[in-house]
Image 1 (cartoon, one colour):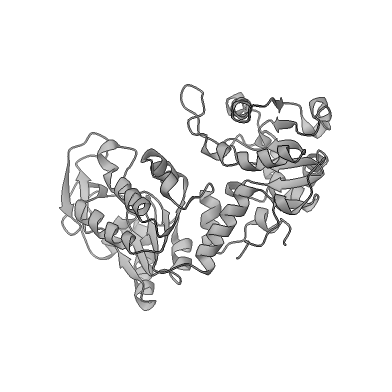
Image 2: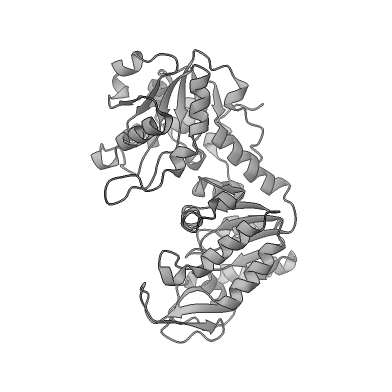
Length: 398
């Protein structure tokens, strides 16, 4: 599905208009109650600043967590409003009033160039139900709808598709860039095109791998999911995580890759631990000699070199999923090695998708060297699986 031709906020006149802006401010918080990573907020600032500069009145809608229609104070967006105020050096009006009862008075007082942030939209059960009457209430707050929340655009929710069916609907700058880059990788990738897949489960990525196989030159499989493939090849994997019911799937993927002349690459050595803990004793062993009772926790140095060589020769890279348990210091070397190799290849289009992978490249300080770190893990995978993104499909075309 090629969504790169969607209208953007630059294609319409927003001056003097009330704009309902859907953002994805579902940011992580630390134990201290403070925002731990502001990336998702920061990436929407360009759209917000554009709207302010062009004298629009901006009403921002977002969600946080999964409150399932229940007002949970610990999932309030009030800390996000405070951060936005500092980032923009403007007074952001935080609106707690129930919009089902009509526009809160604080919204009626807004002037051109003002910004308001509504309370967590998922505090309303009608949001995830895509309730039509609720969507009408939301739409009544504005004259134009701008979607800058690519990460939630695979959800058919009221603030994603319901409002877009009522108001003139376009994408923000973040959404536009995500669509252009991801669609270009799907429709006209520079070659060689390398897909790197990690993470724990193959079941989460079957569809995207099968779809991309027709476009890839090299498929790299690592992380926990690699042990399902290694087991399918008859290797002993000790106590390493794997999905017994997906052995046939792994076998089919390897056979399909061979038929399509796609090179498939698995780890040749692994860092294994005696226990699945951060401080376990560990050693490096070959993929064909993982001891009974040991857990695969990272790729080994020989595999790192194989992956680096592949990455160095790539022109397009899509990376989804860490190649080891990067949350633990002893077992993040492989993931950081992949990140560093991609960052060093300045001639490639590099796309990082998925929350864990994005967190890993941020942790390793590689994010600024990637072409694009997608803010929408589930949405980017859905796009690569050729699934419809209802929130994007609802936006106007050029």
